Image (cartoon, rainbow, N blue to C red; front, side, top):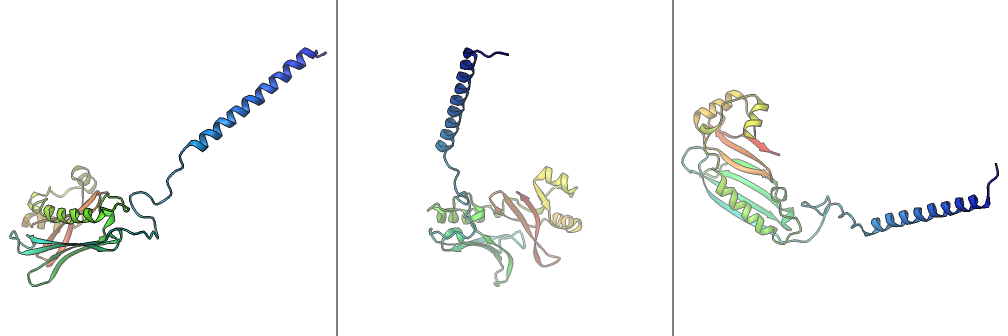
Length: 212
């Protein structure tokens, strides 16, 4: 088969065109890659990265108020503290104390996971103050065990009420019938627990936990 010079010229031109098109596409890809903003470094979200060490405001928050815990009358005291320097390293303590000084309940955990405020925010200490005030204001939010729904299948109960039962059935039904005051507080940004004083064991018991 004889190939004319004209055909060779067409082939050469086509090859050159494809090469130019490839260069244009490659250049466009490089442009897009370089102009695209780099992803933020790890650990710059809502919580400090592991091993982070950065300055920030200190937290020295102390709040307290009367609480109905062992009876329907507010005879005990609820204490809330957020202590630490810097504040994003602070420790949260929620305590219920009897008039004689006996500690009836204690919750202790890092403070920062309880609020959505960024760990670098200079107003984190104010968020700690607001959180402590909310604990006191919402402590009796749930009311008493008399308002709790009847015992049910764990999955159905959670689906219907957003809480997981943390005591056995006999204790749950006894506490519900006894109409015990409930201490409610958050354990995270979207999690919480309900605590009651059990006169049978003379101790605080986490009866429900909910959230994520």
